[in-house]
Amino acid sequence: MSQQYTREKKGSSLIDFPESYVVIDLETTGLNANFDDIIEAAALKICNGEVTDTYQSFINPGYAIPDFITELTGISDDMVKDAPLINVVLPQFMNFLGDSIIVGHNVNFDINFIYDNLEKINCPAIQNDFIDTLRLCRKLYKQMSHHRLSDMVEALQIPVDTMHRSLSDCYSCLSVFKNCYNEAIRQYGSVQEFQKSFKPHSNRRNGIDISSIVAETENFDETHPLYNKECVFTGTLDRMKRAVAMQYVVNFGGLIGKSVTKRTNYLILGNNDMCKSIKDGKSTKHKKAEDLKLKGQDIEIISEQTFYDMLEM
Image (cartoon, rainbow, N blue to C red; front, top):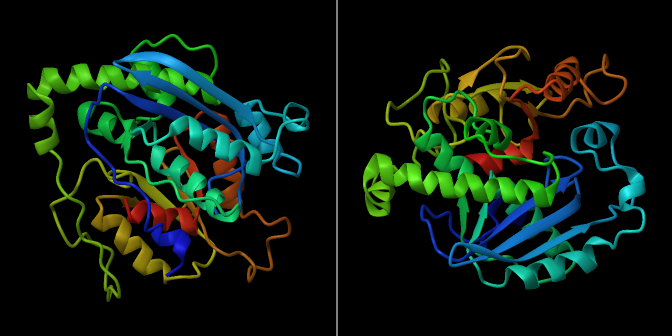
């Protein structure tokens, strides 16, 4: 198992509402921390519930930003051409974070990018504990079918300048976090009772002998990112058979789809090298998923490695 997969020095995921913390958000060229790069980083420093400092920087990835990412985020090559490189920005960013608890929406992916890039530039690992507002929202707003930051902003009527830009998303996440605190107190009476309501992650099995893709438990963690989400696979997985990966999905309460539709939440990309019908590196499923995402559908296109990161949450 690779170091990128274990990230053994990584901090712990917390269920809490501290008075002081930092809110972070990254924009990247993709979702795979091993192959994609950070192009914008931002953070808000919160002390006693108030914003006391901000950080924002573009990062030059050293290559052209994919058109799909520019269309999604609005960040173009011109915006990053004079920006510093990752080995300049990331130490500054870590200095801003200090040893604070980190808050972010789907923050596990941001931290994975930071962790792996710090390793690449021979800097100490990020060890900050973190709080994922996506996990909180899935617990507190079960009536909602989707919990993306944009969904929460709309549902909670939070004013926003623009989405998919780091500093603006930090402010949106901060508002969501404060709303989650109020909702946790309303539903559970105290932070302590809210914390008790979370079940530990379970059912992380290896070497499953699958005769049919049926969940092996009814005791699901409803805050897990795969719970009640439809997953579709494309290509050949390098680390396990597709049937085994599907078993993991249903064991976490997820659903399996055969093709990419408006119901699809995750498209997991395997290796397409052996498929002679693919000429440009993207399968039909991949192209359909990109089209749906740009149209606002709740779908993420993730690598096999990112899928394994999700299993480890």
